[in-house]
Image 1: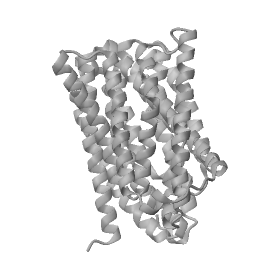
Image 2: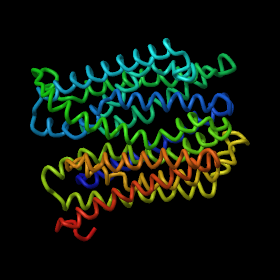
Image 3: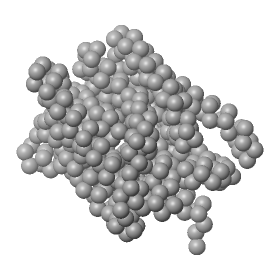
Image 4: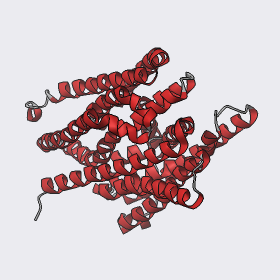
Length: 427
C-alpha cells in the first residue's frame, strides 16, 4: 500500500506529465495558427487571446484562487453549508462581472469605434463568462482533492478542443480566418466548463449537495478582492508585454517573433501551475497543523522534480530553439535571443513558484501584491524603453530580467522567514 508521500509523488508526476502533454498540444496549435494566419494576423490572434485571458482573470474575481485556500478547510471541518454557499456566491460573482465588463467593452466600441483595436478582440468579449468560469470550477475540482482531473480539463480538454476544431475547420474549408481561430479558442472554454461542472458534481460529497447554503459574503468578498488583485498583477506580469508591443506600434514581424518566443518559452509555466494546484491544498493543511517537517519534505521533493524539469526545458531551448522557431516559419528564427531570455525567466519562475504561494497562505498577501506591482511597473517601463529600438529582443530582455528578479525577491523573503523555524533551519 502506498504511503502518503508516495501518493504525493505519483500525483505530482502525473501533473507534470499532463503539463508536458498540454504543452505539446498547445505548441502544435500555436504552430498551426502561425502557419495558417501568417505574420500579419498571428499577432492579432495572440493579442485577442491575451486580452481575453486578462479580462477573464478580472472576472474570476479571485474566487477560484481563494477556493484553493478555504475549500480544504470546509471539507475537513464538514462545513457543507458554507461550501455550497461559496459555490453559488462564486458563480454569481463571476457571471455578474463578466456581463458588466462585456457590456462596458461593447458600449465603448459602439460609441468610439476602434476602442478594441480589431474585430478579434471584440469577438473574445462574448466568451468572457465561460472562460472565467472554467478556471474557477476547475479550481473547485482541484481543491476537492482531484488535482489531476482539474488539470486534465484545463490543460488537455480545452487546448485539445482548440487544436481539433482548428484542424477540422482547415480540412473542411481549406483555410482558417482570424475570427474563426478566436471563436475556436473561445468555444474551448465552453466545453471545458461543461466537463468541469460534471466532475465537480460527481466528486463532491453528497452531504454538501443537499446542505442548506450558508453565506459569509462580506468576508468572502474581502478575501477574494485580495486574491483578485494578486491574479491581475500576476497576469499583468506575464501578458502585458504582448499588449505593450501592440500599443507601441512595433512592426508586425517583431510582434510575431516575440509572440512565438513567448508562447514557446511559457509552456514550462504549465508545470508550475498544474503542480501548484496539487501542492496548494497540502500547503494549507501543513500551515494549519504547523507540520513544518512535512512541509520540508514537500519542499525538497518539489524542488528536485520541478527544478530538473525546468533545467531540462531551458537546455532544450538552448540547443533546439532555432529549429523550434523555424516550425512557425522562416521569419520567426530571428527570435532565438528573445526565446532564450524569456525561457530564463519562465524556468526560474517555475522552479520557485511555491515561494509566493507560501506568502499568500500565511496571510502575507500585501507583500506579494507589492512585489508583483513593483515587478509589473518595472516591466512596463523597461519594455517601453527597450522594445522601440530593439523590437522583440528588447521586450524579451526586459521580461526575462524582471521575472527573474521578481522571483528571487520572493525566494529571499520566504527563505528569511523559514530560517526562523527550527524544523526548517537546514533549508
